[in-house]
Image (tube, rainbow, N blue to C red; front, side):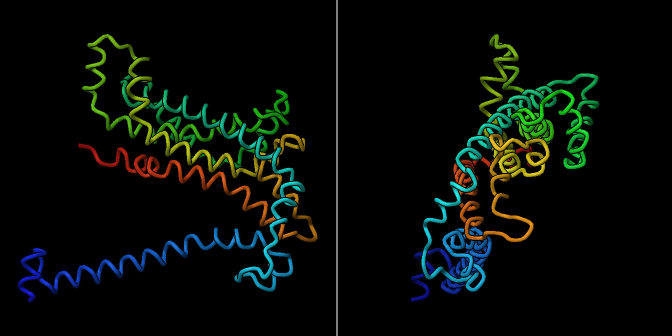
Length: 290
C-alpha cells in the first residue's frame, strides 16, 4: 500500500506525512503570530463600545452592553467630520507633491550622469538624517515671519520636505533596476525625456510609488507634533488634534477616546488593504538585479 501511495504522489509515504506535519506547524505558528499582531486592533474596536466602568473592570473581555452611541457622541464632541476633511486635504496635497517631486528627482539621479550628482545625492541623504522634531522651533519662527501659521501650507510644506529624501531613494533604487535599453529605444523612436518619464518610467515605478504613498500617508495622517505647534485654529485641526479633546489634565474619557480612535484608524486600514500588494513589490524592488 505504501508503495502504491509513493508511486501516485512521487514522494514516500513518510516524507508526505512529514511535509503535512511541517505545513500544519507552520500554519499554526503563523496564525498565532497574526492573532497576536492583530489583537491590539481588535481590542481597540471592542473597547470602542464599552463604558468607562467596563473599560477598567473588564479591559480584555467583550462588553456586556454594546454602546453603539459611543461612535455618534465621539463624532460630535471631537468635530471628527471637520478634522477628517482637514487631514484628507493636507494628506492628499502632501502626497501628490511628494510623489511628483520625488519621482522627478529620482528619475534624474537614476538615469543621468552629471558632475553635481554626488552632491545632490549626499544632500538628500543628509535630509534623511535630520531629526524631524528638532526643527519645530526654527520652523515655527520662519512660518510666523512669512505668515504661514494656521494654514494648510504650514503642514503641507514641512511634510513634503521631510518625506522627499525617502521618496527619492526608494523610487531611484527601483528605477536603477530598469534596463537602459528601454530608454535608448524610446529615444531612437523620437520620444523626449518628458515622454520617457510620463509614459514609461512613471507607470513602471508604480510599486515604488505605492510604497512611498503608504509610508507618507501614515506619517501625514498620524502626525501630532507639527499640527499641535503650527495649527491653533479649531477650524483647521486635524484628526490627531481632535482626538486630544477627550483628555484633560485630570481625567480621560476612554469610551469616547476609543470610539474616536476606531473611526480615525479606518482610513489607514482601507488604504493599506488597497495598496498592500504594491507595497510588498516596492519594498523588495531594486534589492536584486539581473
